[in-house]
Image (tube, helix red, strand yellow):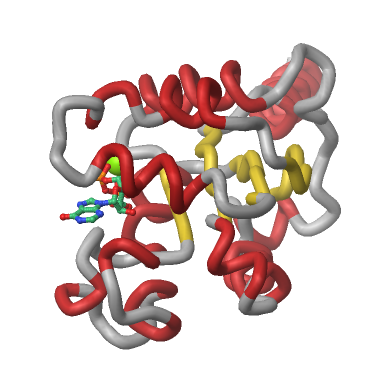
Length: 169
Ligand code: IDP
Ligand code: MG
């Protein structure tokens, strides 16, 4: 009986460990790519304990970027934003881990770099809101939408992270 309970507990633990954790879409914008910040930004997410599930450097074009930022299409800065985002390749990523959306946003810092605390990515690496080097999903729902927009089925990997047992209880 006790052995059965232990086996059930172990298989439940296996299921939890291998089930999909929350995912967020993080993108290094053209200025971040050109300024050689890809490695530094990736390192911060790795060090925090998140798992890199997908990554690509690409320049998908105006229409794709307009779709990504569709919510902001009425804003005065929208044309400039699209021009900036289309000015070079971006580094698109999916990071997995519990609370990855909320924690990811905190790691990025506030939209306006002057409001971003030192220690955050924007707070450490940029000055101007129009060159704020990175994007992060603002909710689980937008993360799912953005991941679907930027990655094809099968491009987002699923694997067990070797340090999972040291990151999660
Ligand atoms: P977020 O990137 O922190 O989620 P959003 O309000 O979604 O901020 O805006 C998307 C992006 O649009 C910003 O990251 C920034 O690049 C740009 N942006 C936002 N507000 C302004 C502005 O007032 N002037 C110029 N660009 C802006
Ligand atoms: Mg946003």
